Amino acid sequence: MHNEGFQNARRLSTSPSSPTTETFPGSQETSTTSTSSSSSSGSTTPSSSVGPPIKKRVPTFFSAQSYLRYQGDKFVKRFDANCYIAITRKLDTHDVSRGRTNGDVHAALRMLQQPALIIGIESDGLFTYAEQQELAEVIPNARLATIDSPEGHDAFLLQFEEVNTHIIGFLREVMPEVMDREPICATDKIGDGDIGAVKAGTVGEVDDITAW
Image (cartoon, rainbow, N blue to C red):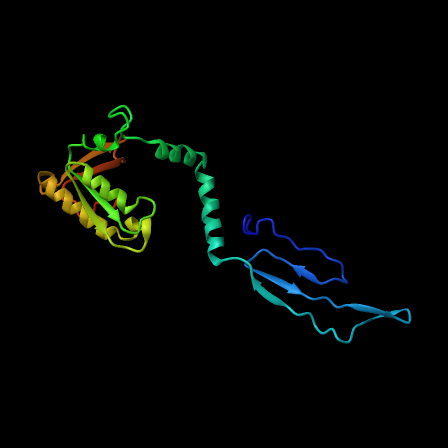
């Protein structure tokens, strides 16, 4: 049930004389007790101690499971899961020192000359805060911005306003000539005739760097 959801759920068939448990697609399982019979003088009569069927509703899975399965089904229809294998392998085997400093990662990082902003989330278990501290210490022109959040790695999405504040402040400091100038708009008309698509781009006067 927990592995396949309720896609393969079906009624369970049992003999009339045995307790019956029926499982239906859905979030709950219904159990009923059947009447037992006894034979007396060649006739079959219900036992007097057996009353109406008793239904007992028992939760069988967490409510979030159906939502996760729904989103998962949508995802696999438009994304090849094999891409994850390639992506995660690239992440696991990436080495900034390869072909540069013979395995010395710190030496490779010290080669970076451009200013860098490192944003670390103290509760992040994927990109740990200690790793962000290490990057900020080794990269020559780097600084560390800290986000204090209990949301772990998801904080960079949930606390986007704080992320935006750090990035905008950093860009205004290191690229004032770009951030303070008047916006430059470029338009290209695509197509022939009076009807066409307009492609526009804006540089400068950035208020929300996270609103991609």
